[in-house]
Length: 248
Image (tube, rainbow, N blue to C red; front, side, top):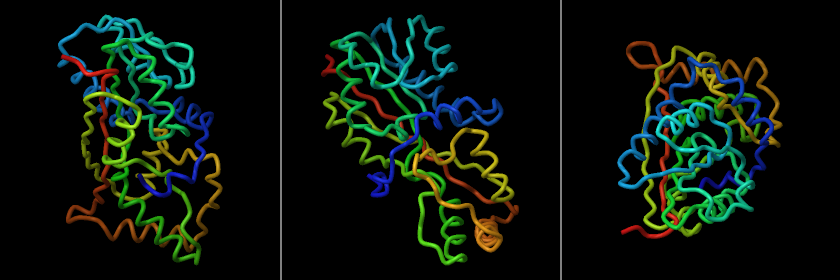
């Protein structure tokens, strides 16, 4: 797991606020993750009737309802009093911002029926390398130490370990790498804000860059441009799945 993961806690109110402000045209990564989750669910040779979504997600709820499931939504802690209540527990774009993720995964497993399935997707630690480099350049230009301007994320190996520790059977973890090309750093930042994907740490507190730092960050980002003048930024979507117990 990224060592900076201990910098939390995450601010759930900020997460909900930013999720509510997502613009439709900026939801392409979220929609891609939902499409993948629905495809994976369709490959499972069993019927699902009840589902719980960790975190509010109207789009995923609608897709699962269309597939014939009865869908409830809430936070992971809502599962404490619901052992064995759901055939499916799912989440898209949220697990990397839960304060007690190991505990949340244990609650999810316990809330599943005997042959229940957990499916989730979230941004992985391989995301935003160009932006991370630009932020370091800005901090160095202003003589500042590193600060958590991008909230810490989970890599593939750590995700697999978390699923095993939570007691899921037959855990599967893989990733989907998406490259998006931007004309400038401000365009990327505007896109992240529109996605509701900016820093969600309660103690994020790093002061904004001054003129020197901002200029250095913009120049560093622009220096990574390809022949077409655009900068390729990487987004990594990690997909995890696991069963409440081994299936036959």
